[in-house]
Image (cartoon, rainbow, N blue to C red; front, top):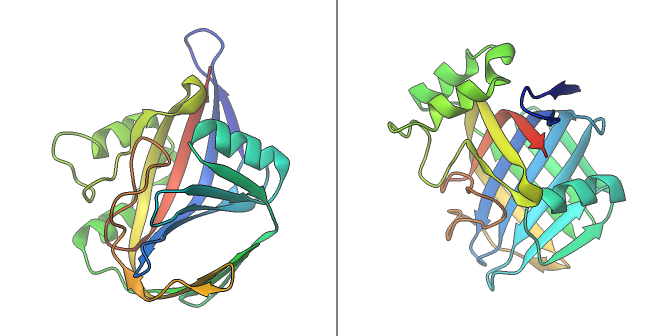
Length: 211
């Protein structure tokens, strides 16, 4: 957990350390899991869902986290439900109210993933690192942006530290099977950027600046 003060005016910066998983399904529903091991709210997980018709839904474990996330990103509806995540070897299992999600992750196949894993946590937490990876070379996959403006006049930086491909996905929402794994297409529209088109598990240090 970390909270710092900006140098211009009274701007607080909140820091979140954890993982983001983005997956698509053959039904057209795309799912983004945030699994935060350290945050100003303590450890928690939340799920963002965009349906094939464009409806955006947030599943959050408490009113406090729901308020913060929905102020930062855009949703059509918000539900406060228990969100439980368990990790066993390379298999992740998520139970979040109406959503049951299970996925596996594979070995790093890209040199980029190996290089990102070597990034020190102190460096990843600096907005300058996010600016570098968001630069003209576009080191990260298409649609991925590591800095931008969000809701409530906030600014956000993603310090990427690791990337692993998702192997197999099974998902059920409100009792309906969402089908097999598919690309995250079209890109999700919760914030200023999307997750990689290819289903991916990404380790990040996220900094949100409040105004």
